[in-house]
Length: 137
Image (cartoon, rainbow, N blue to C red; front, side, top):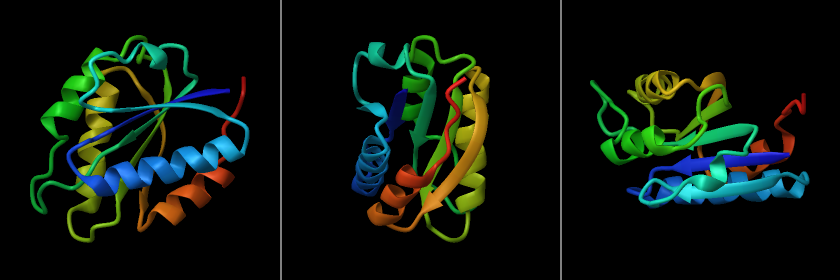
């Protein structure tokens, strides 16, 4: 199954989580196309059945989706109706609000949110990728 991934390129920890998640999904036999949000062309995401979106907490009290990631989501072709999962690094206070902010922006683009997750390490993201249940339909 084709799985797409777009993640914030502003923090290295997000890139590490994306790498772990991608590795876990690929070990399950999934085909994963991953893009940082500073990419110019997201054409490879159009054919994906699922979309994983990774971001970070940028404020404890009023977090918002980083501008570059929000703009990238608006440029992804065929994003509407994609089953989507948001993820973020574990960060304590404000973590839930940061997840809600990115999920709100994903819904504005028409994503069908099925899950959200926070990871404490690349290894935890990898384990999640190996065990997550994604339906083929």
